[in-house]
Image (cartoon, rainbow, N blue to C red):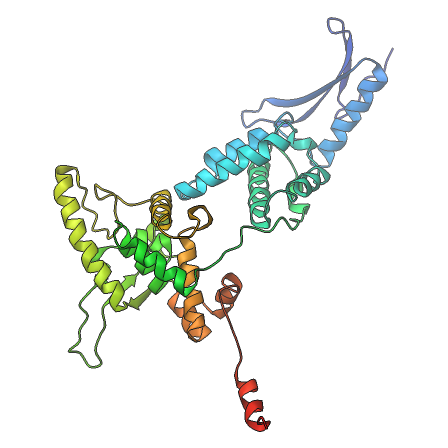
Amino acid sequence: MTARRSKGDGGLHWDEARQRWIASVTVGYTPAGKRIVKKASGKTKTEAKGKLKEIIRDYEDGLITKDDKATVAQAVRDWLEFGLSGRGASTVTTRRILAEQHVIPELGARKLRELSADDVDKWLAKKAKVLSTDTLRKIHSILKRSISRAQARDKVKRNVVMLCEIPKGQDGRPSKSLTLSQAEAVLKAAESAVLHAYVVLSLLIGARTEELRALTWSHVDLDGRPEAEPPVPPSIMVWRSVRMGGDTKTQKSRRTLALPNRCVAALRAHREQQELIKKKAGERWQENDLVFTSRIGTQLDAANVRRALRVILKRTELDPDEWTPRELRHSFVSLMSDAGVALEDIARLVGHKGTAVTERVYRKQLRPVLLEGAEAMDRIFKDE
């Protein structure tokens, strides 16, 4: 007679209907007190015993989960559904697209408990051949956060993504800036456009596109106080953006900027034009105090601005498909640098915390030419 197995060693029996040996072991209890039983089967008793030992070993190592059939796709979709609360709509959309295009098709069918660091490394290496480093960082984050959420719910015991480094990807689309003559051509082409003032502000004060889309008339002072001592020029208060919560990108981004005369003129004309649009819209107009709006007063989105800029660029010799609204801000930095404005002043104007960010983000637009040494040597070694 076969000896009874010891408590904790699990059970082993023959299933006549399935014609297989069945191994089973209790690995815990539900909050209601019901046993959680893990099972495995084999054609031979030896095979079933081996699987039973594996279950017990995983249990003792803390690797047993409530759902050993959970897949990467299920974890990612669960995170997309419940793990992005509080994020902006654009962030949610972007993460969903990246997950559906790059994470789920490649790794989705893999069971969470079977996903290895090698699997993730190979996946990232493959993606590095076609994606930028920034996009690689985002898809790595999606997978890591999805598995962390699954781990917190006992669907997997380890997050192997934490063990994987992000490789260097392809170079992203290089940013560029308009030359002075190109900027003048764009300003000229924008004169008859609805977003003429938007283009003027982007080029002449360097505000971010999300800051201008959230700009309100209550934060615009077109008169200033010339009688004050010292005089206060016309200005705008860049205190809001279309980011989640309405805050600017950083605390330093919250700034008040004096307006060049051309900006004042453009905003005055824009306000008059907006009054005509209001009358035409009638009851359909939604008053939000926004400076730049749709035909019914609602806030513009990024796509609205991109389309409007392309229409303007078609009137110039520039290729509309090669330029984006953010590159008007890059052009502002470039033109200021060309004019000899100090890096520290440029950093404050564009709302950066310090010069390090300005140098890193706009390094191709900055032209830090040091003239002092050459001028001194010219004085010392005069041409004969």
